[in-house]
Image (cartoon, rainbow, N blue to C red; front, side, top):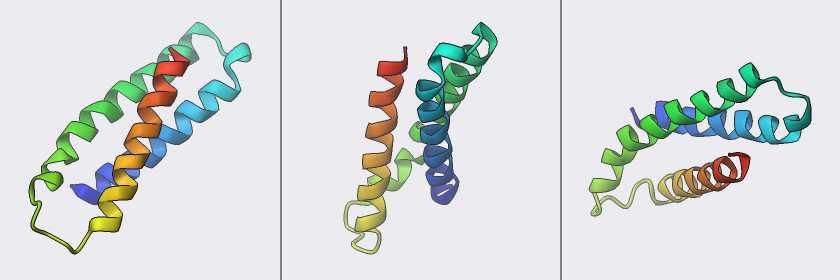
Length: 82
């Protein structure tokens, strides 16, 4: 579940960045597609949150840091996009 969530974070980050870059040329349908994609990614962020509960694990500190940064960047860009 964690690796799929990482992939979803990267994919939604790419979709939001492309939505921001092409914002002037997007139709209403495509704007809604970007927003719905972000909402689906937001749900997967909550699903992968279970991996944060094991605070004693030192194996994936770098991976968790990258995941948190990707999610934070994605949320900031989505707020800017809206």
